[in-house]
Length: 586
Image 1 (spheres, rainbow, N blue to C red):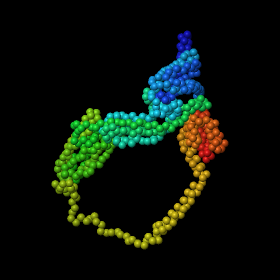
Image 2 (cartoon, one colour):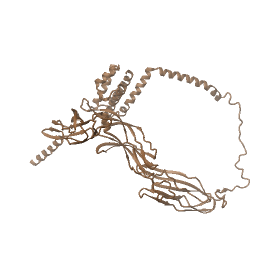
Image 3 (cartoon, one colour):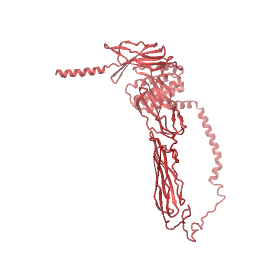
Image 4 (cartoon, rainbow, N blue to C red):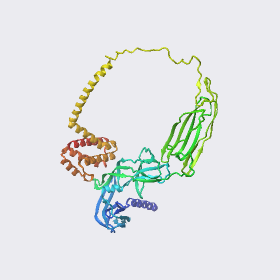
């Protein structure tokens, strides 16, 4: 019995210690800065501690702080606590410095942060404050172009994968492409990405989330140093601010940030000239080659098909196939090209085929000479040549009813026609109808063509007057413009109807974006009192102002309290109505 009690107490003690685990850590806004920049250091704990002791900050001067912020939230009965001490530091000189350990005491136990290394370099052109939202967005958002091979051969496939890395400190709501790269010295093909997938990884040794935005296959068409132009995006980044809502949750500020994958250069090597085959036409990769006839035994004037095919992995669309040569007794038509290829990160794979149609004109045995195909093999870095077999055609006599003349060159055998039958295809009995020259005058078509100019003139006058009436309806035009503006800002919220949390976040962001566009204020200035004051200055109706503030309050409460689909639809309609009303009033 005592053993059972002891085991029970032991596990209860372990559970209690896990629940009461103290987390105390230090974070810096950046690990490398210029001597003319400022550094922000945050000491964050998940339990309220006593006797906080900051480090000495050797090599820096404290220019701000300590600023203290506390977050204490309850979500689904679970308490979440956070307390942060923030300092702003100015470097006293260049060099590598260590942010020492800070200390706190929790329930009689002392906890310390880990030291942090910071490098101070020469002054930068544009100094950035460690607490600046634009700077925070820049430091935590990166667009990278990953190149599979920076030193390829001419016509060797390389891949460029564009990844957008986002730090856990910020979030991204949407993005759009500002400038697409033009690959002027490459043959290029984009690989379709059906659905963007968020993955986890590391950027410069730190944990990040990333998404692959684009994959492109490039085949360099020139030797030497070639530039790959950058991809440029406009990204909406949500950056945490120092402000909190009534529940203690941190408020975010949306920053429109332009990011670009830096210009990359590759050095393209020329293909070796030593042992280069005479028939080499630029094929680079790993290929197989074959020449296949549809049949070898046939009659004169009967056709056959010969396929000249190259298959494998490489620059399949960027070289010529060897041409088929036949004896003069065989009539040869221009080949038809068919392609069965696909492109992925491994390159272009599949086959290309030239289909030749050949018609023998004489009886006999006719050889079609063998063909050879040469390519540069990337694995062995050498040229390889594949030879096909000679094709021997055995042409029998011509079919019954046909005639051929031996030695007649490329002429195809003609059908024998008996005397007297050469005109049997000409019709001698005609079935002609007379034309009445006066039938057009007075017809329906005649009067329609005669009256149509007058009808068009009257229609143009009517449409012109209607357009003038619409332009003169100032109130109606304002109403249409306001409704269109409301739909524009609320489109994202409408897509998320039914998903309570996402809907109200999108609705709140739409209201904030509308205010930023109309009142030219930042998210950090959007307190309810300030918004009410600005709307009053712009002569907005008191009822409309009250409804707008109540919508903001509803968004804050609804993210943490249950709400029905009917309530969400009512809030959406109310937001559309309020935005339309405000746009007409201010």
